[in-house]
Image 1 (cartoon, rainbow, N blue to C red):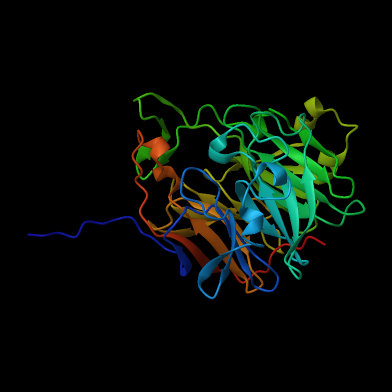
Image 2: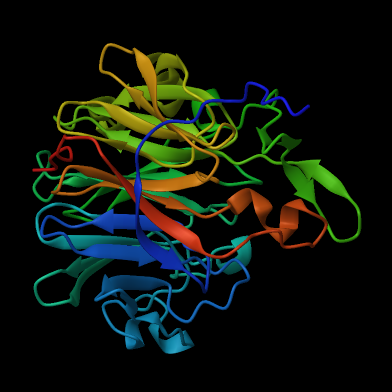
Length: 364
């Protein structure tokens, strides 16, 4: 006699926007006019262009193929290995280039933040970093922007290093001057007690030669409140959520060693890669251990809004003008570096969306 045993319940309604049969994507952003942009960091796949726009159900290199071709003469103006793309809601696409293919030491002048004008599809400005900001261990991960402070606004970038200090990098967009904050602080560092488990198995670095090491990445997910006054962040190797006032981050009179007293702890939200905020101040965060998406209300109450076996590593989030939450699912944990050189990923990777009935947080 066959008996149907009780099983785990899945919920949350989402739909497919785009399927990827080539390189693995990490980032997505939706502009205020509904344009969809994707990035593909160079982690070993055959990446023909590291930034793309989805146009008529095809991937087109953005802003051009030339901008995605690297040569020694155009290191600062071409895209090397882009980890994040963010449309600011005001006609600009911000491209965060790690300058570090395969997690190498960043190429000098290659790690940068690039502003692309979405009307002309031309690069408008490039922000590079000094050697005391982008360290040999730095991996630029994600960026949030606020144009209501300073003359040209500020950018906040996470350094998700796997072998050096994590940090939040603050950039004055008027002058290009940048500095590191919460450098090596507990809140930007991996949780050394975390034993991440994905698809029922412990996630750790498993090398071809049989050697293993813990999976530890520093500050990664980042989100900014609708008024620009609060920055939420989390290490990738952690289940904890933190926030800090952006005013404190910008205030250079506060020594970095004292900045930890301005950090607020919000509790466990699950282990997250991407995060984003809507116009009401709700934070959306992935939970890659549980194939889930969480919503954290401004009062700290957390709820799971999607739980589905197909959400295999929810990576970057974006909220479109259509009030959908867009997110990349890329099976990051199935990469060869976690399985003794065996690539367990199954194509296609996907861009999904679910209706949240809230617009994105404004930046201006």
